[in-house]
Image (cartoon, rainbow, N blue to C red):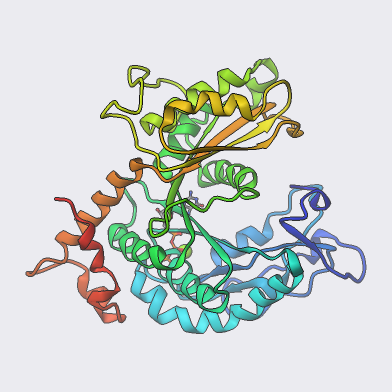
Length: 397
Ligand SMILES: Nc1nc2c(ncn2[C@@H]2O[C@H](COP(=O)(O)OP(=O)(O)OP(=O)(O)O)[C@@H](O)[C@H]2O)c(=O)[nH]1
Ligand SMILES: [Mg+2]
């Protein structure tokens, strides 16, 4: 998104003094709370950056790709120096109120910039650490819901690697999802294991970095968010997404795509909860197969050029079961290295039940009477039983 004038949903034009140069980018000090200098750029993204430590925010602000014509607004960048110790309770109870007090003006500023076009918020966060789960996913989402009751709130959450790097990740994700079921309209779950597998097996990236994983997420969100992602059933806001084709940029010029070639594998990915569009279990033939995922409504988003339209999507996805809505634009310009036909399916699916149950079971086991590792760390920072080890209600084992 180098040219913000083409993306009015994501950027606001603000008054400027002087020409923008990369030296004007706000760069926070390594520690401390001082706000960076005022921007001189004409366009600012409609976002508020937030962390309980400076490292990630600093690195985001230091990124200055050549040709980029926008800057983050310094009013909308907040950080602390302590971190949240991978502890939901620390993020929620210790950072929640103080950080919300500082960010609410930024949120109001961005809402004002949207004017009548304001529809809601997208909160992007991980589930495993203390900041993403306790602060962004729980406290801030709760406050946004209280302050803007009519707004649509979508939380895009990163599900941790199954062999996770955070030992208490299941506690944090259960505590967060328990809150989000009460506050969010849609929780778009994307799995780090899936993103990693797509990078390695389909995009020819031998050792994927977080930047590689994030590129997939950003691309997906840019194409999905203009559409309504709120699932049809109130009370169960969890949704996930599959997309295709998955082609390395270098191979795009040598690939000819047809809509059926894109949509048929995508349909099978959705049916069998397979994140990649290769090596699909084609023997799962219909929705009656016990191995097939159950979909309670789905949205198919088509972006691309050439012959093909909503009818192709509807035809390909007829076998998914449940109601399928097909949206999107046929005549979308694709950037260099992007295929000229692209599609995604997004919605609530039974595929989410297994990881959810696994996380809840691990958390519930820690909550049975007797010595429970780590639980005291949550109680120490104010997490009560009702805060969610209510997640144990979901336990199926
Ligand atoms: N996809 C993706 N996952 C990430 C990224 N950074 C961290 N993660 C995942 O997020 C989880 C760790 O959460 P973090 O976001 O690092 O933690 P935090 O929310 O900042 O919380 P604290 O460190 O406790 O302050 C792990 O599951 C990581 O795999 C990223 O850039 N992209
Ligand atoms: Mg962090």
